[in-house]
Length: 152
Image 1 (spheres, helix red, strand yellow):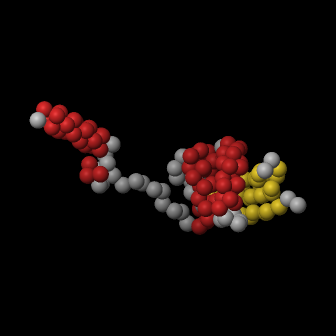
Image 2 (image 1 turned 120 degrees about the vertical axis):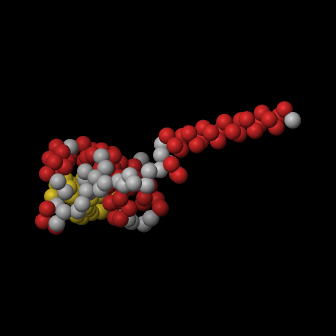
Image 3 (image 1 turned 60 degrees about the vertical axis):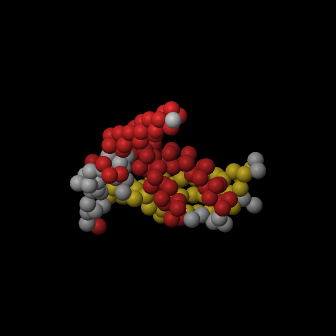
């Protein structure tokens, strides 16, 4: 009987802790339904601003040799003047983050698929841009062109 009482007390403590965490982090039934995430409104087509990034050259390595080269031309879409200036100043940091990420991501993608999936690649670049710049600064990473130069 004593073991059942101790087990019940431990269960009550765990459940109380879980409810406390959910309330503190506003999760599940404790979430505020009126707290909507404010996303900037899309401007007219003429108001969007684009920042060109110099071409990215990615060497795909495997078996201790270069398997191929990819060259990407990218544009970043931003919607406000403040975001444009901030993104333009941090373009070298973004480019470095893109290169570091693509050096590991492209070989993994090519192991699973025959060729690059541009939709997945675009989402990956958007994810990295959001990590570096913050959410909703860079609205879209546009892949202008991809040149694949396989090694002979």
